[in-house]
Image (cartoon, rainbow, N blue to C red; front, side, top):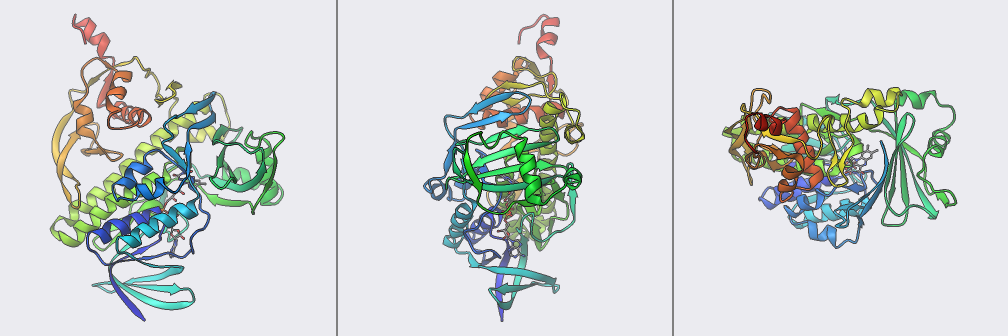
Length: 475
Ligand SMILES: Cc1cc2nc3c(=O)[nH]c(=O)nc-3n(C[C@H](O)[C@H](O)[C@H](O)COP(=O)(O)OP(=O)(O)OC[C@H]3O[C@@H](n4cnc5c(N)ncnc54)[C@H](O)[C@@H]3O)c2cc1C
């Protein structure tokens, strides 16, 4: 039995569903092949504040907001210092990924995508003019013929040519139920590992331990025993809690990676199939959705404007590489906060920069030497020019920031246009003033991350005030 479609998407997680919603809404005949029956448990339950705004772009935010998932208003962080991070607006979400993923897949169905589920995609073959994908729907084998193939099969799906972009890491996790469990998430640094507790909307509590696979190997006992030993050294389960593990302890790879073979004229990888971030940022789902949104524009361009195919491919690879590099830098600095006081190889291996500590609870952490009062100026090397970028439905020319140090021009920084941010810089502005000005377009933590990136790339230079004073001028 053969089924025809324009675009076959393997995987119905957030990336696959968002890609399907977009492409089906643009009139493409889309089929999503998802091997699991939903709802099912899946890691990635703590969603960063950027997820809902991204879902608004495909009209799915209302369905998620009205599902009653838990808003994150407080996170306990015991990293370089012990602190409570409050967000009264509750912009982050704690979700049951079974329900969350089902809502997004239903949204794709509502946009006209067909879904085969539970159906496993097996061998794939390019005939020279189309893809043939072997699919097993339940127990029934069938062949899918598609003009375009998208891999959205996630970390545990089809492996391509993944290059690790950080230290090898394994995550052990288990779900708890019972009384006295924490009501808000907790992140803490341990001796040669870090711990994460995530309370879920159904009352269960996911506990995760991230460590070096080599360290796990040296421990004796079963996986469950190792997990209990590691957890006993954490503060995730409060004393006096009457709780029990409601399922098996599982281990999974949590190493960040990038697959540079992520796009060709008839193939794309989106979400974790292309780029996986260090879970420390808890922004994997946000990044997966972002790559699906930009990936949809790339696919549309490849199919409808083949004359722009080269631009579209270049754009996609560049945007993923840039996101990976930026994230690596952020993660390195964040591990660096602990590496300052812990000599264990776990921390030293992961730290690439020593951060100076939190600027303010909303602003996140700074990089060496930067304080909220540091004055900044724009590098004289910065220029603006037109480059190919993602538009509403095609890759188009847009203004981008260029500089010698930057190498490739950059138009967007994590989905936000860079040129308006750069144009907002006035000589002598402080870090605090700039991040506050940008807060109209992005959250302060994100603004701080962008600012750090601009300083590290030499677009912004610290020390404008002193220079201005030396010249006898004000700011
Ligand atoms: C330990 C750990 C903790 C994490 N915690 C967080 C967190 O708190 N917050 C966060 O934002 N991110 C987190 N992440 C990252 C997050 O899980 C992923 O970034 C996100 O799920 C990626 O979405 P996706 O759609 O690309 O892939 P997935 O969500 O993995 O979806 C892929 C889908 O493809 C299907 N599939 C796979 N192979 C096939 C096949 N052959 N045929 C058919 N279907 C197939 C799977 O069943 C699955 O439903 C974490 C990651 C790890 C490793």
